[in-house]
Amino acid sequence: MAVYKFKTPISEEDVRKLKVNDVLYVTGTIVTARDQAHKRALEFFKQGKPLPINLEGLAVFHCGPVVSKEGDKWIAVAAGPTTSTRMDIFEDEFIKNFKVRVVIGKGGMGKKTTDAMAKYGAVYGAFTGGAAILAARAIKNVKSGEWLDLGTPEALWIFEVEEFGPLAVAIDSHGNNIFMDIQKKVEENKQKIYQKLGL
Amino acid sequence: MLKKAKIVENVAFNILKQAVIYLPEDVKQALKKAYAEETSETGKTQLKAILDNIELAEKYQAPVCQDTGTIIFYVKAGAKAKDLDKIEEALTNATRRATKEVPLRPNSVDPFTQKNSGDNTGRYIPFLHWEIVPGDGLKLTVMTKGGGSENVCVTGMLVPGEGIRGLKKFVVDAVINAGAKPCPPNILGIAIGGGADIAMKLAKKALLKPLNEPNQDPEIAKLEKEIFEAANMTGIGPMGLGGKTTVLGVHVDYAFRHPASFPAAVAFNCWAARRASARINADGTVEYLTHKIKW
Image (cartoon, rainbow over all chains, first blue to last red; front, side, top):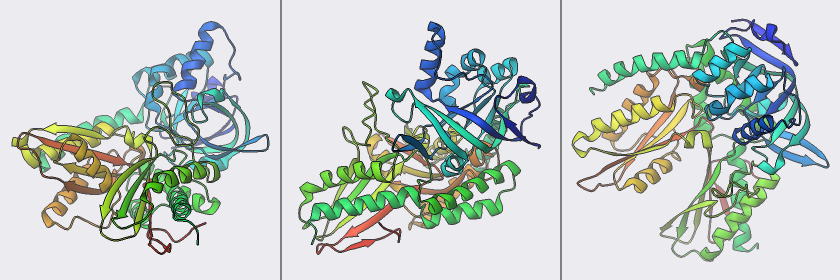
């Protein structure tokens, strides 16, 4: 279990150093995207329209923050991760097209995303679900809020962060996926539980 | 003296704010105990982050989780209480105010147009559960229910012939299927009987019970303990990253059932189990029942 501190833009070479169970902190730019923003970003790509920000080497964060506005300035009040599995249907294309190097969320992602991470060079960093203030404290500046027509939880927020983490590397770029490993163990434990309960 | 509707609005605002910032003491204690006892290294780091986050939320007076949930009120109204027709509007106003002032995340979306109302209100939202009780007072309880744990709640119509054995399997399977998604460690509300809707209503309401209060019926308390131990044998662990803490507590409730039906419901709550209550007496005085801090 090694600890890494990366600055964005993160290179493919650097991201490939990471192995599952390592701990990662990210400094630089991270961009939030949930279901609707993923969908729109991929539509934009198809139509050849540019996104509000070039995502290459950045981290995408599955998050719908609590934000407040003071004058013209947005403040991130609370910003923990949302469940990533909902983005599984988009993430392989997202990684391929936009070359993000880190996907931050909770709950893990499936085989399709794991394969894309291995192929194009990206990792999944699990941030503790619900730890919204821990996250918000690492956000030093809300650079902008884009696609606000989707509603503030679904908008694309561009955050400048300092040592955002700890992120548990749960999917690396070598085909390893902690969540899938745990799932296998849980399936084995299920039989023991059935036995104990006399089922 | 303030008008009744204004008092209700202020109290509802206070319990909403209390709930989203300060976790109930019993939940905090259970998380601390879990941290002390967790043996998985990754699991321990997750519990540490949770405990740090709880402290930071209190320090900065900010919501403990960015998903400030769907807002549900449980109203116990004294049969002789006045102005009951004003309560719904007062609770809706409190919700709007809390969304702006705490602030809360706007979590109320029209399922047809996908438009977010922006203020946590909408058709049937905030949702109100009414109960008429003797007396002239009013007890308000709020639950702000996170979406991640809501997405894995299940209702099943089990086979009556399999009885409680069937229930045990149903619950274990629900916990395993939920895996990392509901932000474990979780609290489980389980109910059987009544009907599909009644079982889920009771299961969700069971999430309001403090963790250190097992069912008064020793047989049901035994079942709660058995399910608690079984869920923690799964190895899902904090945030699904492995470990022995998958649930913090289990509450079971029931209604009598139709001979042909065995409805069962499992309601999940995330570790950020937010709830708060207050009582408003007929003379306008207020007692905060779960939290001391008010605004």
